[in-house]
Image (cartoon, rainbow, N blue to C red; front, side, top):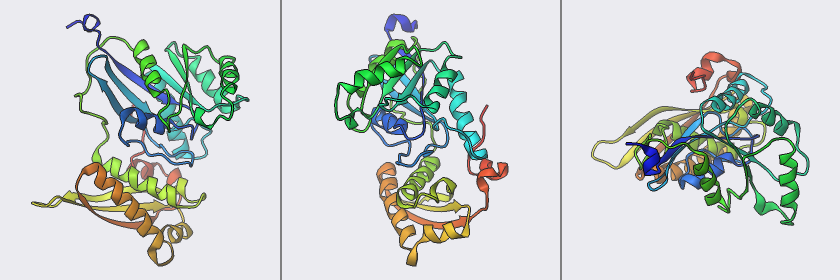
Length: 305
């Protein structure tokens, strides 16, 4: 069937931007389910996450949510930056998410230089417009961004509140090619359940812990099995950190911090799996794992060419 005659469009869209501008929040808002973890700490998203938005009348958008593009400090950092930049070669439309700013910094200029190497349509989404005190400031911010790159479209939005998110979807469909449905219409992500569970636990740890610990943690699912004849899933997971002192912080006095992380994670995992969860957490120390290739691969951070 010729998709141009049916009007059905499909394609891949990457969401790029500096760390902590709201990329995962936007994707979760569009999909309507929580897939990518969100936190107010930078570098929350560590790998490319593929999620699917299907409109039976218009088409299907496959989103790649990438780690924020930043200056890498270790091998994990380099992996994250490579994963983000690699997606620019694999997509049909680029969504650049940025914050309202009167000054365009080096991070944004670096992204603009990367985009100049592509001929793909680029839509700028100026996020967090709900934080603006004066709405007229928005026009000035849009002009500032126009000076660093020639965007195909600029859409002001609030991913958190859902403002203008439908406009973002409209603009994506405008530039997508005609094509087939890549996934069943009820598919929302290609991530395996175990990976989503690990990410939920890591998110709850990020929310609960102090500044110096989070970037040095990973989560591994040691065991995940549904009990026979019962609507219960048993999950055993390890939070991996780099220092003994961090282990103490994660466990907390009398185990209170680890219990808090586990309780918050279990609540969200049960919502996702729609069944009761028995979650057991413990903490392991693996010194300098972020600079160890073998450990990075073991924790799921490796290049997929």
